[in-house]
Amino acid sequence: MNRRNFLQNSALATVGSLLIPDFLKAYERSQLGVKPLTNQVLVVVQLSGGNDGLNTVVPFRNDIYYRERPRLAIQSENVLKLNDELGFNPALEKLKALYDDGHVTVINNVGYPNPDRSHFRSMDIWHTASESNQYLSSGWVGRYLDARCNGTCAPYDALEVDDTLSLAMKGERVKGMAVQNPQKLYNQTQNRFYQQLAQTNHAEFAEVDYLYKTLSETLSSAESIYEKSKVFKTSASYPESELGRRMKTVAELIGSGVVTNVYYVSLSGFDTHVNQANQQERLLRQYAEAMHAFVGDMKQNGQMKRIKVLTFSEFGRRVKQNASNGTDHGTANNAFLISEEGRGIHNAGPDLTNLDEGDLKYSVDFRRLYASLLDGWLGTPSEVILGKKFEKLAV
Image (spheres, rainbow, N blue to C red):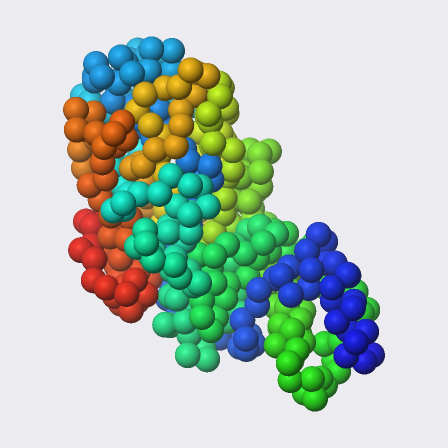
C-alpha cells in the first residue's frame, strides 16, 4: 500500500467511531511487560458540566443558603449529616456509607485564582494545572508520565476509560491511552488493513512515520490489555449505569494486574441551568452507587490499600438559584478523595457571608491537591509537573 492510499484510508476509515490518529493515543514507544512506575493507583473521576457543590455538600444550618435557594435548597431533615454544619445530598446515601466506614475525605472551597466560568476554559485549567491566564498544551497526568517514564513506561501506564483522550492525559512526549472496552478495542484492531500497515516498514515516509508507529503500538497494546483483562472478572454487582460500567472496567483491569498507575473516567450532565433537582439527584446517585460498588469490590479483592479516587468538577454553581429552578456557572467547589483511610471533612465549609459577586471564594488551590497526590501517592516531585511548588494537603 502506498503513502497516498494510507493517508486517504486513515482519513476515512474508522475504528469504532474515531479516526486512526485519534482513536487511541499510544505512547511513542512500546515497552510491554515492564514494571509499573509505582504500586499505587490513582483513579480520577471527573464530574463534567460543573456540579453544584452547595447541593452536594449541603450547609444545612446556614440561613443564607435557604434564603438564596427558596425552591432548590435541600431541606435540613433530608440531609445526610456529616457534622453539625454540613451533610450530603440524600442521593449520596451510598457515599455516606463509605464516609461512615472511614473511606472519604471531603475538601471544601477548591478552586483557583481569577476563576473562569467557561466550561471549556475551566476544564482546560484543571486538566493542565495552569494559571487562569496561562495556556498549556500538556496535561498534568501527561507530564507525570513525561517525568517518570524515560523509556521505561508501559504503553498503558495511564488509561482513560472512554473513546477519546482528555487533555489531562496528554504529555509532551508521552500520552495515556483511551480504551472503553478491552475486548471491543482488541476486536476493532484485528482489521486486516491495520494489521498490514503495522507489519510494513514505512521509514521512507518520515513525515507520517509517527502515525504508523502509533498504529503499531496500538495493536500490540490492545492485544496485551485484552489478554490481561481476561485474568480477572469481578463477581461484584455494579450498577447498570455508564459510570457503573466504567468503574467495573477499572476494577477488572486493576484485578488483572494491568500495568497502570492512573485511571481516568468521566460522568457528564452536571450543567444544570434548568430544573436542577431531579437531574443532579439522578447523577449523584449514579456516582455514589458506582463508588460504593467499586470500593466494596476492591476491598474484597485486597486492592483498596493501594487505591485513591479523586473526584472533581471544573467549577461549582452560583449561590443564588436562577429563575429556571437551576443554578448558573460559579467558581469554588468541593472535591472528594476515597481511600483506605479517609480523613472526614478536611476544612470548613463555604463562607456565604463573604462572596465574590455572588460566587464562592476558593480557599484551597486545586493544584495543592494535585501536589499532594503526586508527591505523596504517585511518588513524583510535584514541582516538576506543576511548574512551581504548592503546599501539600494533609490528605
